Length: 171
Image (cartoon, rainbow, N blue to C red; front, side):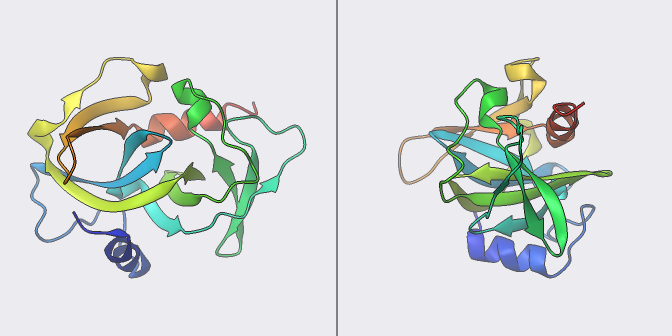
């Protein structure tokens, strides 16, 4: 696994969503691993644009728990996304200090909140077990992630479904 600094260098060099590391084969997938509460979530690297170390949230009047506010990213105002309520947990307190992962798919983008960004991780696609319509169809896969501690389960997030779902919150 490559750590947060390596991930930031990769993203800051303007890599596009279609690019992968030269070492990554077609039978492998690379994810950005984040910790949200006690859960480990994996965002596919092709949908990840930037990591923000301390998200400054501007609360929107009448905000929804899933989209509590917005933040500035490179001169643009981008919605802030709290995935917790979509996964059945309580929303994060707005006054906390969080990491953010700028996610994008087609014209949709949002900064997803996280307690920590652990880095990039490449796994053989065959090790990712697909999930059926669980947790509002936002978790599309799952795999074990061996660390120096006992094995953890990482939930792979379907970023296009997540962003479409968040876009419909205000509709």
